[in-house]
Length: 605
Image (cartoon, helix red, strand yellow):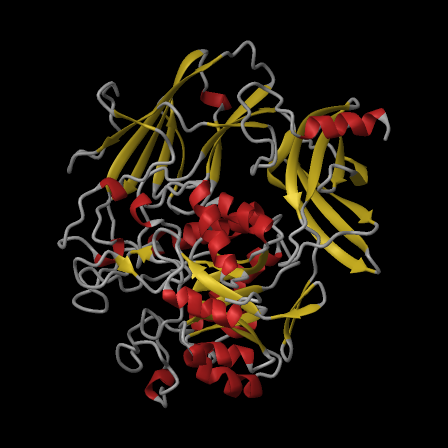
C-alpha cells in the first residue's frame, strides 16, 4: 500500500477539529459536532406565545434530545391519540461563542434531525427559517448572522395543535442537533449518493453522485471505497465543474469492485465510502458514509429478490416512541429493540408513518433489516383523529394537511436524499392510508358491493367529499419527486381502500402496491392486474394473514401491525397506547412475539 492510501485510511476516522464526535456524518460534509448540551427550555404560558425577549436565566436547563410531552400529566380530558398527553408551545435557547477572525472563509451550519413540530429557528433575533413537518431533518446556514463573541440560538416549537396525529408524536427537539464547520466550497447537504449499478460474476459496478456547493475552477472529487477490514478496494477521481453563481454542481463517478461482498439480511456487509473535495491537491472537505452493495428485483408473479435470491419479507410496522421515554429514544434502546425483533425472525421494518431517527437506519444496516421508508400519514385533507377513546365520539381534524401543498415535495425529496445511502432501505412509500374511504376522499364505487372494504367507510359515496381521483394525481407527482433523486428502489404506497383506489391512477403511479388488511383481494387483483406487484403493507398478526403470504408466490411479504407497543391510538382512559406489538414497551418479546418466532425464525424455539 502506498503512502497516499495509508494517509487516506488514517484520516477516515480522525476528527478534523477537537469537538468532532462522529466520524461518519449524516449531513455528508464539513466537520460535525453534536450540539446537544447547554440548552435552556421554557414552556409557554397559555396566551403568551410570542418569541420571548426576556432573559433565559430562569429557564430550565435541558440536554437534547428532549420531549416535553412525555413529562406532562396525562389526563382523560386530553386526546386518546396522543396517549392522553399534552402539547403546547415551547422555547429552546443556546448561547455559544464564535471567533470571527479564526473562522475567515469558513461557514457554520446548524442541523436538526427532527423537531416536533412547526419550528422557527432564530439566530441573534434573525429568523433563519421554519419547518412545519416534525419528522423532517433540516439545516440552516448561520454564517450571515454570526457575531464575534457570544451568539444566541432560539428555537420556537409550536405543538399547540397537539391532537394532530393518530398516534403519539412527542413535542420538542426530540432528536440530535449538530453544528457543522465547513469551507466556503464544500460537499452539499446529503450531497453523496451511492448506488449499486450491477453485480455479475462476483464483480460489482457502483456509481457515486456527488453534489458540491460553490465549486471553483480546478477542484476535483475523489471517492475511496474501503472494506470492513480497512482495505481500499476501489477509487475514482473526477474534475468538478466550476459554478459561476456559487450554486450547486454535481458529478458522477463510477467504480468497479472485484470479488465484492454483498449486503444481505443474513450477512449485512458494510463498506466505507470516503468522498473528498480536492483543491490544489489538498482535501478541503470530506465525508465518510457506510454503504452496502446489493441488488433488488420485484416481479408480479414471484415477488421480491435480494441479490438474486427470492425472499419473503417478514416485516413489522414501528412507531418512533419508546413508552415512558417518549420520542427522545437513546440509541441503546433502539439497538436492543431491533436485535430482539431480528431474533424473532423479523427481517424488515416499516417506518410508520414518517421518516424516523437516523440512528435506526444505521442499526438496521448493521443488523441486516430491510426498511420501508415512509413519507407521511396525511396528504391535502385531514383525517379523523379520535380525541376520547378509539373510533368513538366526535373526532378532531387537526393535522399536517395545512402545509401539504407548500412542503410535501420538499419533505419527500429530503427523505430520499437523507436516507438513500442506507442499504437497508428497499422501498420508498409516498403515503399511508391516504385512500381511507370517506376519510377524506370518496368515490361512487363506495355505493356498490363494498364487502371487500375492511376499513370503516363512514357511509357510502359522499359527493360533497374530496374526489378520490385526486389521489392518483398526487401519487404521480410524489413518485416523480422520488424518481428524480433515486431510481434504484421502487416507490410504493400503503392502500387502505384498495377497491376505491383501483378506480384511480394511484396503483399505477407506484412501482409496487401495498395492501392494508385486504388479504382477500390478493387473488382477485392479481388476476385482474397481472402486472401489479402486491404485498401486505399492514397486516394483522393472525396465522391466516401470514398464510396468505406464505402460500402465494406473487405476494412478497407483509408488515405486521405492530412490531412494538406504542403510545397513542389509545382506547378508553386509562389506556395509554396500543398493545399489538411483538415486543412490549421495554423491548421484551411478548407471547405473540414468540408465536411469530415459531412461524418466522429459522432457529428452533
